[in-house]
Image 1 (cartoon, helix red, strand yellow):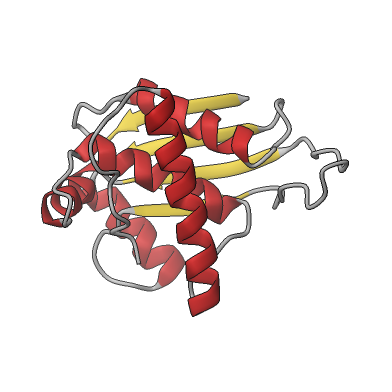
Image 2 (cartoon, one colour):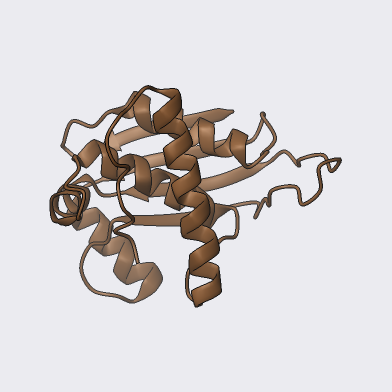
Length: 165
């Protein structure tokens, strides 16, 4: 996978973990290994501007996804994945700090950013959580991916609970 992680947020983040969990999520979803993804961490002012511009909602948010080629995971085992540009996942570490601290599992900013990275990738792949059945599917998949990645990396303790709505 060609995954680029850029930190423009002003906070120190674990870029390697974001890269690793994004790669893990795309592999689990059977996305073509030559597909491209960009993950950008921005500050609250930049995120608020994007949130207003694209969602017409005030204030910064935790994660936004901007799909390019609208790639979808293969639906059958024998179906070949399509190569393309997935798009951009934009993260806001300042929001992630607050959400991690407020979550029932009280986790770090980096753990929250890992969760948000998977969440953003799933949005790029066409998953949503507007309807109750969509939410169950997307958040179940998100948890399975985060838990699998954490287990593979020997991380113990409870996985971050979804704080994104």
